[in-house]
Image (tube, rainbow, N blue to C red):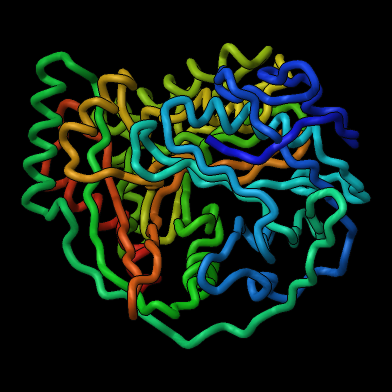
Amino acid sequence: MPRDYVAGRRRSPRGRCSALPGVGPEGRAYPGGVSDPISLPRLVATTREIDPVDDPLRYASPSDPIAWLRRGDGLIGAGPEVLRLDVGEDGRLDALADVWRAIAQATDIDDEVELPGTGLVGFGAFAFDEGSAAPSTLVVPSTVIGRRDGRAWLTRIDRLGGSAPEVRPRDYGAQWSATLGPGAMDPEAHGAAVRSALEAIRSGELSKVVVARDISGTVPAAADLRRLVRALASGYPDTWVFATDGIIGASPETLVTVRRGTVTARVLAGTRPRGADADEDAAITAELATSDKDNAEHDYAVQSVLRSLRPHTSALAAAEQPFMLRLPNLWHLATDVEGTLSNGSTALDMVRALHPTAAVAGTPTDAAVAAIRRIEPFDRGRYAGPVGWIDGDGDGEWAIALRCAQFGPVEGATRTVTAHAGGGIVEGSVPEAELLETRVKFRPIVDALA
């Protein structure tokens, strides 16, 4: 469990996060219902508006960058960590949501900008499975450089009485590339896994299950991972490009966004590769739009999100028909969902309500996760888990960690890298087509690693 933390009262410039479930007498926190209180640090966060920074990614750590970027806007974390929460046991999302609420209330905030992502900010990378060996992690850096809607800001965060260090830009390191090969599930094993999933569906165990496969390799120990972030941001500007605690990717799928009482989510399920020209693209999208298999898979995912959000909202709406989301390498069936929060929930509360969605697990959820544990010969780690940020007022943006690579610690002259890609298996799925889908989904991260 997280350690070393103490709750108090905070001034909230926007009046959010007033409730504090799990906090007992004298401001001590009991995350996840544990009996022993956890001390929480008293933080100070100061935000000031600045002129836009040219390439703020240069301020991030070369070996462990923190970034959240889309269409030129976003957040960059820099400097040493002020706070780190690592939770690696059942109930981890409950614990993190409750501890964050306590930390936010204990933080003194001086915020002259007052936009989502200003003041106190934590960056998270969470495991897909509660039983994963990988922890779910929330990190607060000492410096955050942000940009949104033409405005830019700098936030400094430290413990009470401390002084956040100055951060300076660093030139990018030398070009590098990864050496990649088959992982624990090669193409032949993937075909067997898809057939196993189809047997589970035909037996009535579940209606849909997402089966992933992996590739793995190494990168040089001194690889400047900011180059990977920059390549993904340039090549896939309409995705969420993220980097937190060793996982880096470009996700097309928003898990949830909370902004001043409004919750939104984008559901993706149903995929085709892009065509060679406009005529081929038109034929591909027409086929995808009328595919019974893909529309059934998509509807499973949409209904999963609606069921999870409904208890937390006073109004909730989703389009009746999905639209076509165009990416540089793929077409997706997509549906946007929007609601009004009714109970003061934060972005992390919504993350724990939604994860795992049918888009990355299956339907029913518990049966799908059990099948994934049985069928896949690896621990997914943070792949297909929530990744994003939350601020002191509970606003935040979270994506599903897709089209990504997970980097291990330095071991001698190299560090390990593992990437995953998967697809939803429903009645009518064909193993050969599912393998092709994973190859297309691997392309963004594999091309950027080359």
